[in-house]
Length: 447
Image 1 (cartoon, helix red, strand yellow):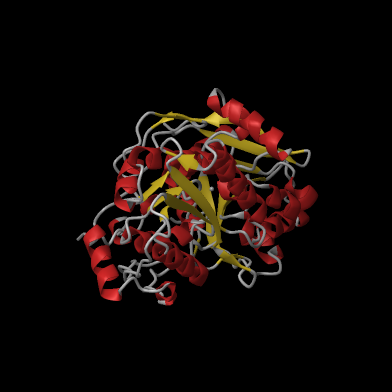
Image 2 (cartoon, rainbow, N blue to C red):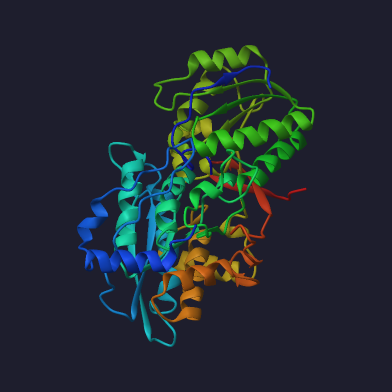
């Protein structure tokens, strides 16, 4: 699942009311020769990290170790394995492991062994993804000469930091959850996006999930169909949350939904009662929140209900960043009736290969997969397919094979990557919390 936490670092606080060059493989070889196959300590030299909300400068190249075995390659995942996103991330790791197990972690008729390493991009201190940890993990992946692909991130803001680092080392990133449009699409984010993330001049980032320029629009249309006439918009001031709220706001206004106001929240606040009383006085039909569960969404919902905005009178809707079990746990009984869009279909609603995968996942792990599990599984299958085409440790060739993916018959359906690395899939879904569980409402199509 996203711009904000699912996407990114903190942006400037805002409140509005009624408003509206390719070094490539040659450079890497040069680095190797100059460094005399430098030790892995080189990975400790952090490149200049992109700022969380501004332009991302090109990251300094990191020395690369020689692969220990020419016939062994490695896939790493970069996901938050610490904090409340762990439940979501663990099922994604399960999906990746499941895909690898299906081929016995081998490719090219057994000639190539595929290793897998889980890199935690979160810290206990942050309780979610941490910029310094993201940079450290990116350097570690680059320095390990066996790494040929990365699966991640969950948060688009984290991807903002790692893409430039991996880009200069020709490591492809396949994302199951990053939905911030500016990572790939010109004209959808900041002025210098997306080229600022690709200092080597070539693309190395792909995603198997539709971007938020589609999801924000779908959410606006869904709200209209639910009878919403007046909405107050909140966001968590992070890349994903602010971005998807921007798209939702523009769509709502276009559809004639009155935007009563908009505010960016402090995600570390102990409560939001004063804000909720302010919103209640404006008599909205719905509150739309751009953010993730980790942005204190449970407390927002509790305070909304506690000041008297009942679920049958004032709806609460958010994006895929809140569609997880952690949101239900955090909101408790007040989570009943919460709406969420999702950039695809829930696992239970998948058909064909997707239905087969869903059954096999439940049988293997004796649990329901979370929202992005199928997308992590699909990401791993794409990486494995690319390795099978190249059959050697060649980062650039594997990157190119991933980006050239066409008519991929996977668990998500039949799809392709476009020139930007975006999926051709556009079908999304509307979901609601009912009896303590997320329940599929309907498929939502982009117009």
